[in-house]
Image (cartoon, rainbow, N blue to C red; front, side, top):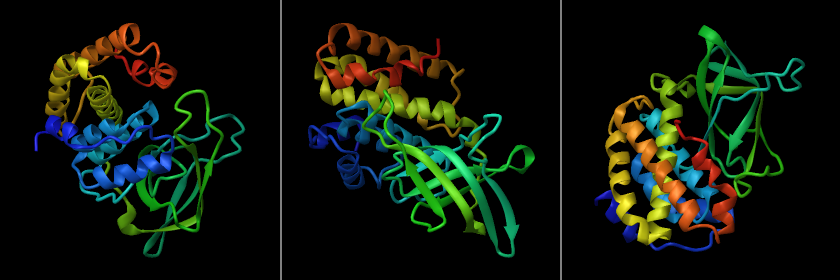
Length: 268
């Protein structure tokens, strides 16, 4: 089915006020889809920017790790405490017989209350590796902190590893990891466009060509923000965002609160 047609084929539950409720819909409609379809359909289900973020984020992670089959929600954790006297040490790894042992903390885990796996970096410089671990591992502690001022519906927290043993096959292929930033932008934009398609049908004339462009860009393994079509895509999405802010969404508290999720990705 054409991706845009898929947006019209789903029934939207509204409102979706709870992350767990959105995850249940996502598992039903999105878990089996390829990355860009995942972002489109997940965005179409989203009635707020927290779920738009999740929809795009899940697609972007799968683009970057195409050979890994993630059954549900996964977080991509690379942030660490870099303060001078860091109370949370960064994550290290060492080989131990037929396993890898990791210790340390990651300071930002998206959807921390509901993610099922974490892809995380361990080590620094030439010794940096990426691994995946299930959040149910008894030596992985997920700490969810109180929400901040933005995306307050999205649970966010930290991951702490204590002598966590991983199978050797837990190591991830990192060839596409440098492109995660541009991919995150591409897929979150796509989820935003899909949500706009469903929530503001009068804007479909502007949204349709941008959805087509998103699909075209995602067909490439490596996404670059400097590529001409990505620059065009960025400008088109930000132009749409400005229009919605001025003419459409002033009455929508959820929209007005978190629209900066999209605005902050503007290239210029």
